[in-house]
Picture (cartoon, rainbow, N blue to C red):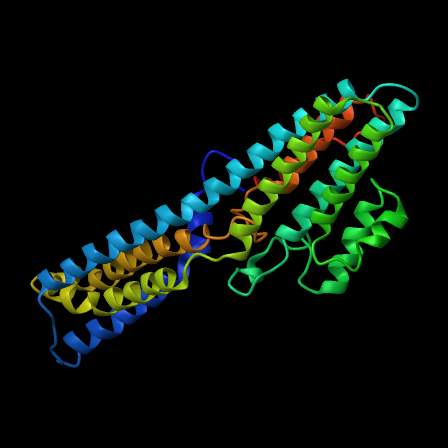
Amino acid sequence: MYVKRNYSFGMTFNWSKWPFIIGTLYSLALCIAHEVLDIHFSLPWQPISVIGIAVAFYLGFKNNSSYDRTWEARKIWGGIVNDSRSFGTQVISFVQGENSDAIKKELIYRHVAWLTALRYQLRLSREWEHTENRIAGKYAPNICEEYIEKLDEELEAYIPKDEVKRYESNANTATQILATQSKRLQELRDMGLYEDFRHMELVHLISNFYAGQGKAERIKNFPFPRQYASTALWLTFVFCGILPFGIMDVFHDMTGIGFWVCPFVVGLVTWIFFLMEKIGDYSENPFEGTYNDVPITTISRGIEIDLREMINDTNIPGPIPAENGFSL
């Protein structure tokens, strides 16, 4: 996620320059055919403008829907932040008695392991995502063996190796870590470290974590409906394809070099429409590992710092700094 005040114009244009370049060249070729080769063809501007208005409304619908997916993803992780802090405070308050410090550390670390597994799973690639534009070297690749190896390496910093080994054959590691956490909480209740009411409060938070995970997985595994995404793209192509045939008549009566401004105007309008389409396209998948993602790595690190400070842990890592304006 970009965290500076604004994308610069240079960054925005560089990201979306090809529609402008292709639109300008396409319109220039048509203008040359019109003026130099004396091949006259045009369309009335009025129906083209109606098509442009319709496409703009459709792109607005797509962008609003895409933004809703991104904002919902951020709210889901905001809920995970709040529930994680509640879990930490309940663990340090409820767990008392012999060896309580070690038990508190075990529960907190296993929760951090769940966060780690969840963010790794959410960053696995899907075929409808923009995997070619992932931030280089930052996220797990879609090769299963490499993903497992990297995940296991991180998990072993929080939970025992034998526990990590148990998860290797599971399809959803994060789910199984929460299941282990739930079983451990029941064991602690059976040992008498806290009573039923406090146990129910802790289990309720486990249910909240499952709910947050499920909501995030819904966004990850169910793409923005392709009929809407595809229609927006093809309508934009159609509008930009016929745009020069209506604009040339507008510039035809201009003297001097005025007519030759037409290709650049067409290129500008083409760029604006495709920029709107591209913004919506890159907002559909908030966990795909690109520059406009919800920064779940940074959020997870913030949760880890909060929880480990609650138990007065040592060697707590610092916040993850933004790199070149991007929060990971």
